[in-house]
Length: 193
Image 1: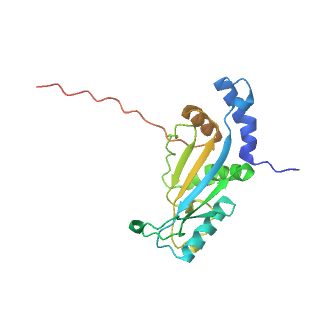
Image 2: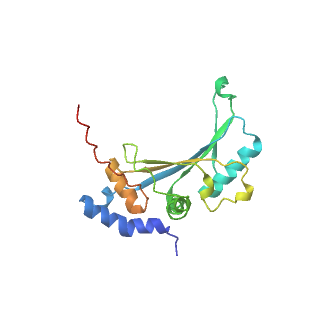
Image 3: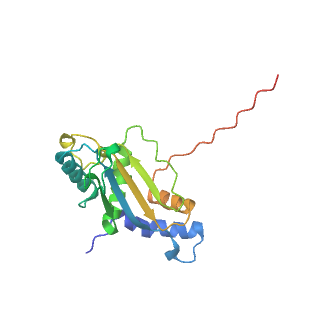
C-alpha cells in the first residue's frame, strides 16, 4: 500500500470538486495546484560555524530535507560580508514532502502562535503566497533546549493559479487561515464653520 499525504488526499477529494463547481472549470486540470514550497532563513554576517550548523540542522528538522547554504559572491564592506561567506540556507520542497510540510504548517505550527488572528490575505499578484514567520520554534520538531538563537523563516508557496483571487480561494480551501479584512466605515467630515 502506497503512502498518500493527508492534505493531498483532501485536495483531490474536496478541493478539486469544490473549485470546479465554484469557478466553472471545464475539466479538473484547470484547477490550481501546488508547484513547490520554498523555506528560507537568513544568517547574521557575524554568525560562527556553530550557528550555521544549528540553522542547517533546525531547517532540516522543519522541512524534512537537507538545506542548501547560500553564499555571497563578492565582498560588501558595508554589510561586513566576505566573498564565499554563508548568509542563509533554504529548502525547496516538491511532491509528498511539500504536502506534508504544508499540512504541518496549517494544522500544527500556525495554530500554536500566541494570539494568532490569521495570516495576511495578500498574494503576490500571480497567485503565489509569501509568509514570514518571526520565530521558527512554533514547529514541534524544534527542541527548545537546543536553540541558542531564534531565527525567522520565509515561506513561499508557488501555485499554478493565474490570479490572486483564484490563488486565495485555492489556499483557503486547503485550510490557509487568512485574516479577515475589516472595512472601516467612512467617517463623516465635520461641517465647515
